[in-house]
Length: 97
Image (cartoon, rainbow, N blue to C red; front, side):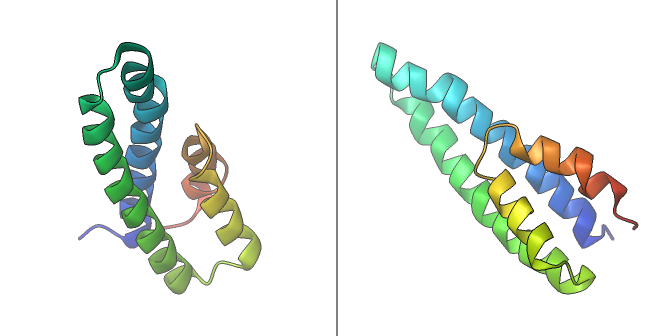
């Protein structure tokens, strides 16, 4: 069985990828080329991944007793392009299983 931290890292990676796809591909297609379908599909996927990210952030915080600073950093990372990748490199990769 996978640990909650491994699942959180996977969800964080997928959430970061979906965010970049949404901002870098889907939104330009919608607003520059009047093609909203990609925005709807990727937007829905990104929304579900964001909810999963917050859920697993709560789970990891409960299990590992993260302090408010680390939780805040992790939440803000989900709001910034490439933020979840930085979070993984600086914090998540160094957490002990």
